Amino acid sequence: MANALKIGVAGLGTVGASLVRILQTRANALAVACGRPIAVTAVSARDASKDRGILMDGIAWYADPVEMAKDADIDVFVELVGGAEGAAEQSVRAALVRGLHVVTANKALLSRHGVELAKLAEEKGRLLNYEAAVAGGIPVIKTLRESLTGNNFSRIYGIMNGTCNYILTRMEREGLSFADCLKEAQRLGYAEADPSFDIEGNDTAHKLSILTTLAFGCEISADQIYLEGITNISIEDIHAAADLGYRIKLLGVAQKTESGIEQRVHPTMVPLDSVIAQVDGVTNAVALESDILGELLMVGPGAGGNATASAVLGDITDIAKSRPGAQEVPVLGRPAHLLEPYRQAEMQSHEGGYFIRLTVQDRTGVFASIATKMAENAISLESIVQHSKQPAAPDRPQTIILVTHATMESAVRKAVGAIKGEGYLIGEPQVIRIERPKG
Ligand SMILES: NC(=O)c1ccc[n+]([C@@H]2O[C@H](COP(=O)([O-])OP(=O)(O)OC[C@H]3O[C@@H](n4cnc5c(N)ncnc54)[C@H](OP(=O)(O)O)[C@@H]3O)[C@@H](O)[C@H]2O)c1
Image (cartoon, rainbow, N blue to C red):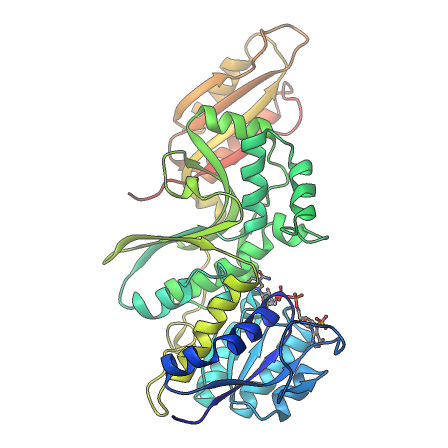
């Protein structure tokens, strides 16, 4: 059998420890599948005294991942530390400079430094694999990068944050508030102690930026993504959505338009009978729409030690099976120097349906005034209903819900601004975009 592929794993937390356990317990089967053994020869973490359920015989320990990248006797550097900068970034760079292959699960790192790192890997003729960085165990990177080469993509979208999907699912199923569901998600370990990165949409944005590059051949531009999290979604929105035949999901969407590429992360109403509406709890889903294939929807575990380690393992076995001198798949789908500059489509020119929920004082003429402001901005309404469960009374606020046909974001913003100026609104209006699957 050929020489062993020697692996160094930096980071032995949820993903890293799972990965090493799998590599150790399935060593024989992996050697058969890859035609050569895969041996973990070095690891790095902060705390050397922690029991991680892995066998340390014959494995060199490094307190510093950068040292491991520079010195260890390894062929592949696996980065499972996390973070866009610091030890993760420095160690990956050092490994590539040294001419090692790199595998990482780090979306934050790739969304910030992905293009530079891809250039470095390509200059060195080495692989930089990152299947686990987007949607955990779902093999979406390989699908975009390899299986669907030649397709022109029109839209990609998905549920890429399990914490948000878990919260929205429980709000709907149990009628609980956002705050209560968040506490429950934290108790069960689905949400971090500081959950802002997930619930404000940043985590989804990082993943979306990587998919956008793979689908549309442009440079990564995570900082030009329109971002709205789920913190303002109330149980009233969820009930109103259900009454209208929709479910609310936090989607990341990238779409080709005449003026450029739209990248947006926001709470979205999807039709109740669509497949993506059925994706519940911590599960992830990614939909790809292209001209040759049509629509592909992939659903599966988006996080967790084993599911994520499965994707990392696939990246490592690809390296084990690769033949020296063979043409490698470009890191970002096309050679990094051929990526086009990202041409951002302005959010104002987004076109789609909108759900608008207004709480108003119960005054004569309010309903007519709202309809007029919509008409003045050329917004065509699918429905406008008074949604309150209780009978109208002079001192009782009323809820009015509008659903628009496809219209421009700029028109909706103008109409809502004009309504705000009329003085009968109570609180802030709620505006949620509607997304329809192609099929
Ligand atoms: N968890 C998931 O479900 C999941 C899913 C998809 C992608 N990912 C990505 O996978 C990566 C790892 O995530 P994780 O959940 O496994 O993280 P984690 O449980 O927090 O583990 C991080 C590991 O890195 C080590 N570490 C941190 N800073 C270090 C430093 N300066 N020097 C040496 N070691 C250091 C820690 O050491 P100690 O153990 O000694 O503290 C720990 O072993 C991240 O990029 C994450 O975004 C995770």
